[in-house]
Image (cartoon, rainbow, N blue to C red; front, top):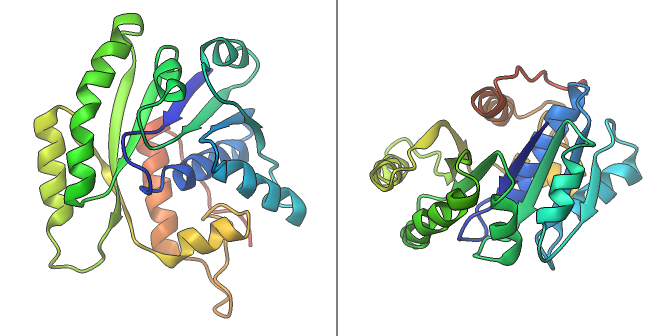
Length: 226
């Protein structure tokens, strides 16, 4: 069993999209997965799961909404599921702090903009406080919303900055691709989504989530059948 939080100190970094895609990848591997949507009031993952169920998309992703102190609920849920994915708001909150006390890992998506790098400065203090009660907590950053322009060096510069803070990002980078938003609108994972009018999938986006799953969980992720 494991508890993985997707959160951080800045919203709009794609954390809900990553959380739901990770949940779908784990569930497709016959894992018993639950997503705790604690990103109030947006509850983006819960809305995605509703669209997914309306379309009859398999596997079904179980999602519950929670808010406030998550500690007790997560301790109980972790005994009932193979994997618990927690999506919290992109800011310092009771949901984030209480989840960090019991979680195995915190994944912090970070965009390579100055504004986002400025907010990440608060992360070391949050982690230090959480590790007083949970010294085994792993913290991993991942670069998202990366430009596809070959001459754009902001992601490399952001990676260097994160390393200096002690949170060097994972090797996987998530690039700006329309397929992420389009698959979300369909209640699908990126591995399931077929681009309209093209009758094909976004193989580059699929490769990103596959590499991410390998780094994060050490598991191979298959491309879902169309």
